[in-house]
Length: 75
Image (cartoon, rainbow, N blue to C red):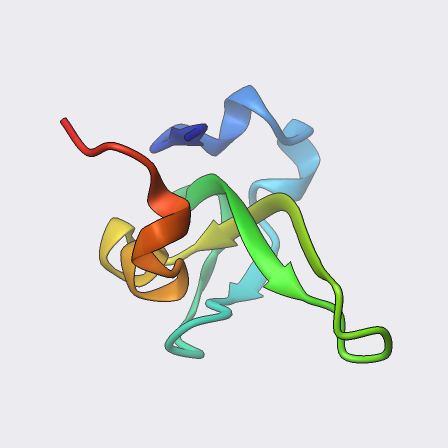
């Protein structure tokens, strides 16, 4: 699983100062202070499960978001 505590590796620097809302807990935070992960989400129109880079406020929210069967082996 791809995940980073350093969003600047995946996001243009001008976007790191943007206000953001955690998709899991709805807490507002600054994008650059978040945790980026390749996560799964369900499209509301088609109901299809997709994956993409998603920014969370913390690793706790990232782990709550993903179903355990999609996380892969934890080390």
